[in-house]
Structures are given as C-alpha cells and as structure tokens.
Image 1 (tube, rainbow, N blue to C red):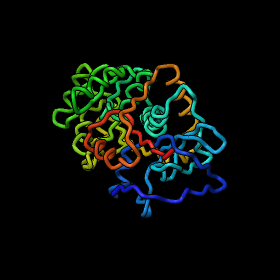
Image 2 (spheres, helix red, strand yellow):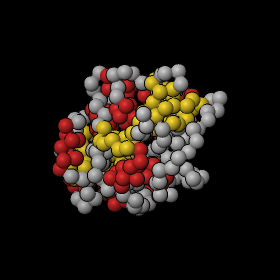
Image 3 (cartoon, one colour):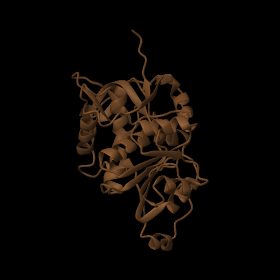
Image 4 (cartoon, rainbow, N blue to C red):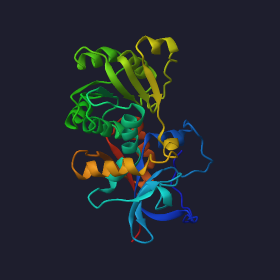
Length: 306
C-alpha cells in the first residue's frame, strides 16, 4: 500500500549523486512492486519510483534510473546512469523517454530486429510505451503500423501519432481484426504488454518468421504455454524483454537515449504526458493507470513549502 511518510534525506555513496526531484515518472512496473507481483520483490519498507529528473548539487538538470526511491523530494541516482537533459525536452517528455522510450526503442531494434517495410502491431498503443512505439516504428521504417487500444478515443490518439490503422485490442476477434487491418495478411511483429488471452490471440496473427515480443502483463493474466511445434509451423519467435537487466549490457543505455533526444528535438517523436499528480496522490495515479483511464506518461510532482 502506498502511504506518504517523512524520511531523512538520502545520503549519496561515492558512485551516486543526490538530486532534488522536479518530477518522478510512474510506470506499470511500479504498480507490480506496490502489489507484490513484480518479477523481483523489494525489501520492505520500500520507496518506489525508478525514473527521476531534477537538479544535481552542481546545478545540472539531469535524469536517470534509480534503484527505487524516486517517489520523493530528493533521490539518489547512480552517477553512471545520470544524463543531462537538453533544454528542448520537458520534464514529462524526458521521463517518458527514460523507461518507456528506451523500452520501445529496444523492443523494435533489439528484440524484434525490425526490418524496414515490415508490419508492426502495437498493443495498448495509447499507453506510455505504446504511444512511443507507434512513432518509433514509423521512424524506423515500418511498412504498416497497426495500433490496438481499448476505446475509440485511444484509437484516435494512436492514429494521430502516426499509426496507419487502429482497432480494438479486445482478445475476442483480435487476430481477425489485425489481419484485416494488414490487408488480409498476417503480420511480422507484435509488441505486447497485455498478456493473457490477448497474447494467445496475437500469436495467431503472426505470419512467416513473425516475432511476438512480450514485455509485460497489464491484464494480470497468464498466457497459455506455447508448444515448440506451434512455433515451427510458421517459423515464429516469442521474445521476452525486460529493461532492467538489459541496461546492464554495455551500450544499451546512452546511445538509444541520445537517438531518442534527437528524434524529439527534431519533432519526429512526440512523447505524450498523460497527467501530473501531486506526489501524495501516487496511489491515485496507480489506480488510474491500472484502470486504463490514462494515456501516455504519468508524472508525480513533489510539492515543497516555500
């Protein structure tokens, strides 16, 4: 349960920097940590929040990934994962790029190994990762980008962001809708953070040598196991992606983030800031995210006495 409390200021180790938090990002991983369903369990009590932007002691505007502790007025960042943010990129935009942007970049480049001209389906396309993946797929040369979303308004947002077609993401009839949206052909790449029945339906929409990249379970449901024989029939791949261990691999952080900054500055990618909440309302932000009442990146703002 998320509860606001007063804590002493964190003390940086030699390899850390202390940041006065201007904004902290909210993502699905935080909700899993809060309810105990994450891939790894933190030691309690625990301050969530891995995405932080603010001012370092030397005045630099920096952002980075913390090992928790971001939902606070002050937070510690590993010096190796703290980067200066261009003035042309706003707080919310920058936070959208930090986890969701890096995830979308690696989903397409590293996991799916997208080839220009291929078709891409982005599930939950109005969300933080999805809204960026739609735009990046276009920027990376996808031949056709198909968005799925739960409401007409969210489908319209995906179209406004550059998707060629937007359809319902409901599991019933999913494969038929996606194939129809791709001109009657099965698709090359599907990015899925929903899991459960949607994952199962998405598998049926893949064409020869298609790749289904799974990177979350927003539905809180488990997909059916995939038998090897089903993969062989159409030369399919199911690929898992989790950003946290990926960032331990050299070259996975700074080059991708640099390209993302360049794309935003050039106007080719537009991060969606879906809503700002006072830090004390973190529980409400989680509830809105889980209920799919939000679009784009959610941001927490500390309020300080003057």
